[in-house]
Image 1 (tube, rainbow, N blue to C red):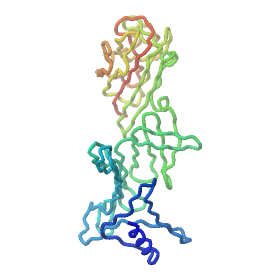
Image 2: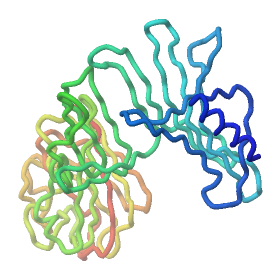
Image 3: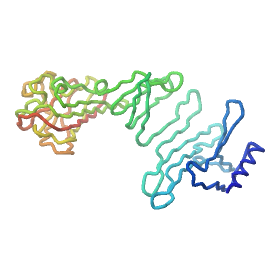
Image 4: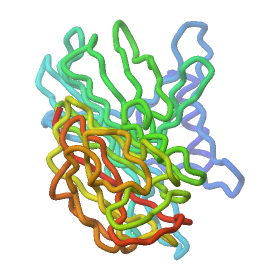
Length: 358
């Protein structure tokens, strides 16, 4: 097939431009990273080589595909599979209001069917561009830099541009929150917060965080006026005691698991058992109260305006328990022994999720 490549090179050498309007099959190679197609520009200006995929018809229609780059290989059964592709749609062909969409697709099943996972779509071309849109279906993994410190986002991220440039926006994930300022050009990351569980989430008292082996994390997802609050607790190192006694570090005050912010109304919540409690009581109830000073092994009934949020019964691995009485704003929350067991937890992980409004 060398004659095809030679002919292309010959045309390029003479006219600097080649148009292919029918199927063209190039060389087959068994060498690594070959065959190789290189478009080379030797002109001493700011422009490089151009690869153009052009659709040229007289009956152009909205959403026609103008070109496709397809990545194809074989599976272990020697079947031809299209593993991924990039294509362009002409979303509007209206004269003077043309817009386009770039689509990225990957194979997501054994059949090799390509699924659209990211799109970049143009909007109204005014200054500034107000309704262009980038959509990502799935997980986004990227690195954000502030000075010399990299921060990696590995969860699904939502970037909302509001109406135009100049608005303050946020990128949120389960471990970090970044404020994005778009003032006069590309996005820049400012005020990065690492471990935002202590910045944008809730904070537990020292009767929880002071225990050896215990892990406490909290974070919030905020979308306009709706809020979702997460609390993750590895209860290793905490103590359970008598029925209706507060769970925490042995004999330590301030054994609360966080305070609901004053500007948030919680409307519902759930408790998930991620890892079964071991040694200590498997019956863990949840209460709220006015004070933050509740002490491990002290009765929850000794606190002011204490309210049972939920009776979890004996937790089972994977169980999800509804919270019928969510905590009020400003209230502190406590884990309480439901059935007497005086012991130190050697394992156990709990995730609490609250839903509410600002």
